[in-house]
Image 1 (cartoon, helix red, strand yellow):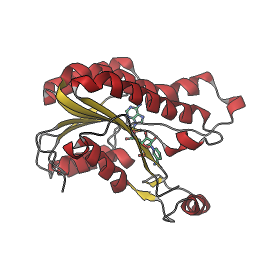
Image 2 (tube, rainbow, N blue to C red):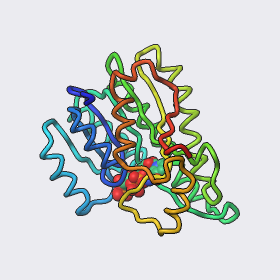
Image 3 (spheres, helix red, strand yellow):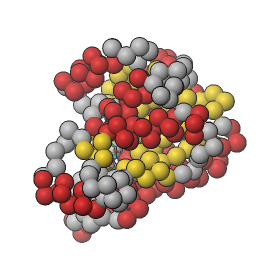
Image 4 (spheres, rainbow, N blue to C red):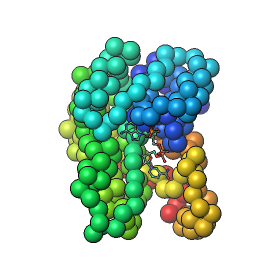
Amino acid sequence: MISLSGKKVLVTGGSRGIGRGITLALARAGADVLACYRSTGEHVDSLARELKTVPGDHHLVRADVSSAEEIGRLIEECRTRLGRLDVVVHNAGVISHIPFGELPAEEWHRVLDTNLTAAYLITQGALPLFGESASVITIGSRSAGVGIPLRAHYTAAKAGLVGLCRSLAKELGPRGVRVNVIAPGVIATEAELPPEVVARYEGLTAVRRLGRVEEIAGAVLFLASDLSSYVTGETLNVDGGI
Ligand code: NDP
């Protein structure tokens, strides 16, 4: 077991899918976790109930990370509720599938704001909350490395995260901040995919199956912990060998 006892962690988009798995895994490893989410509903209530069963100082905060103003409020919540940050997980993401010739500017900006600009704003806002060491973990996508039709905006944002993290790793390394990307392949979440799509994706992997949320959370635990203290500026593909 990896112990993150005493670590203070922010997870964005923690209410569903991969983010939910990351939030619970970090809390179960002993960290105090503040997870943000955008929409309210039973999925948030059930996460709150589940977090109550895990020892630690955990918080759920509503904040839309596509808004600079809400990010400012989110950072303030981290400061008042957690006091400092040791780990930041940029997980919140949105995707859409649109032919490039029809891609409206608003959609380009929505996807870039949530997937890329939020990582810039949140990391910058979190800097004063970092102590002698910190780990910034960004959830990118394997699709950014290969390119996918109808996803130019999404893959541009996810590829942008790789450049952002490589540069930040070099710039912030001297002050003890490590910055890495996790690039998931296709991960099964509550969002159901048509069986023929599942079969096609399974066939692309070496292990012939989709990934599990816990398998992304496992990579996050590694990068959040001191086991990865000499790893920075990296992109860790967690894709079943696509
Ligand atoms: P989901 O759509 O299942 O969950 C996304 C989470 O992010 C939700 O909690 C959602 O909240 C939150 N979120 C979205 N937009 C915002 C916002 N503006 N502000 C705050 N929270 C927001 O996505 P996945 O779990 O599938 O994906 C998680 C991450 O992993 C994303 O970055 C995605 O790009 C990446 N990824 C996923 C893959 C997969 O196969 N699932 C593959 C490769 C990468 P709400 O419920 O309120 O919308």
